Length: 349
Image 1 (cartoon, helix red, strand yellow):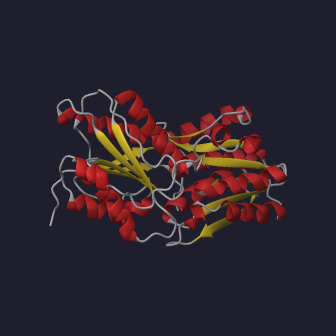
Image 2 (tube, helix red, strand yellow):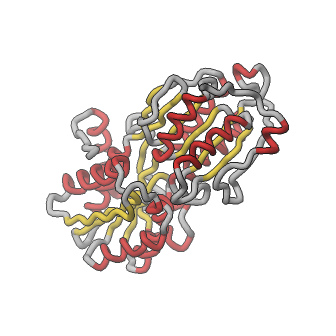
Image 3 (cartoon, rainbow, N blue to C red):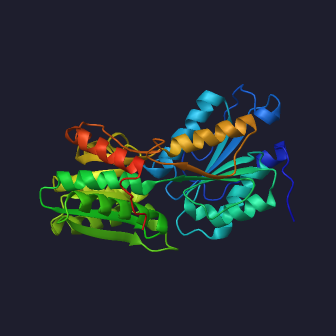
């Protein structure tokens, strides 16, 4: 039976106990003065449920957090945040989303494909609430927006960079969890590298298999995987492993090799002592997707279905911090144009 979404009451606010909150930034509130669209003068209220790692992962979750922070400062929305923990049951994700709704945060962003079953159920139970899920089209509904990216396109460009920069002719890819989403990163990366150097040697390692998602929050495992690749001759390693990427960077730095970051511009967000080893990052503009959803929420005009961010829309891009790929700009610009025009068709599997 559907639950009717009600405005938050003092009792609801007092009883809210979001499952798995653990980071110091797991709850925040802002009472900006912007009107909330259909709310008739009330600030829009936005809840965000992070994936494992939460704020501070220097990658995927932090990209979403930037969008939420921008929405708070520019649009005056009120926000509340929560984070998943590794190994938690599906019921915990459902409860997290439901509690946000019951507390009045009826525009909810779920960060990560692992939330798909929970979003599908909770959205059906709360038809008046609006949901956005990042990186998944598995949850569909009239009140669900799917914020998705063409990760394979940005990864193709990263493959071009890796093949051009490698001195050993050997490169590596570390994936956090072997899912269809992370395979898109792998497929694009290997395709770009092999198109650039057909003789390039490649190594691929996934840290965990579903339903074990700890591969996105295990720096020690990322470090071990990268060390194995480096020992086998790789000198450029690209990771799509969330918080585990910090371990990849540590291993790369120790060998004076090169790393490619993911989701955020990690030459800015990683620990200062490893930033010099990061030659570029495949940036997913999760912040843009989140901000656009919040703008729609504030105006009362949320669009359901897929919102796709690709190279053409600058939804994915290569970071240039540090100038380490400036010498490849002309070639990368041409490859990007060929992808956008369809001359190069980037595989996603």
